[in-house]
Length: 235
Ligand code: URA
Image (cartoon, rainbow, N blue to C red; front, side, top):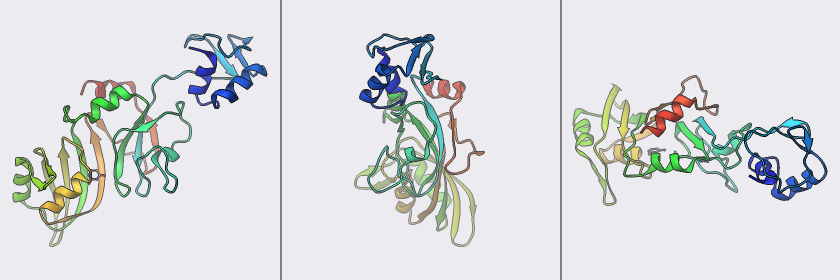
């Protein structure tokens, strides 16, 4: 890959800033000054910018415990996005794999690996997603059956069979876990609404084999381990 592309992809600056820096002598390759932006480098080469090593990372995978109040987008003129929370990543082309509503918390994968994102989001693949929800209203055995059979939510959505577990109920509220195999707009909220109750708190716990690391506070994140990445590829 060209030296200027290498440095741009690693977020050193725009293509023209990087080219200027190269010409000014900010860059060394394997200890030698490199003054030509078109010089070819590979991951084996040791590239430095103003003396600091620039390690090439092709794909990056980050697990975020999304807090409420930020939107699942890469940029937005008004709202804070999930990418605004990520401070020290290698890649500048990360995007969220799917969306959680602004008020939903929990597991969100950020990556620049388009193939993996496609596999996880493709409606054909039926990747499992497990949510925890607090519900205004009492969820019942009948709801478990209806969800299991594939509930007609409204004219535009008949949900695939889903696994509802009722964790707790009292006179007028419930805590549930719901496993679904698709990701339609507001899916969990609409399913619960369709049986006459309302989600008041929602958190995603898993996506396929990837489980939310419960040591991450809302807003915190960490890189995936290689076993976690391999697990997702095996979905
Ligand atoms: N279902 C919802 O209703 N909202 C989400 O954010 C995710 C799933």
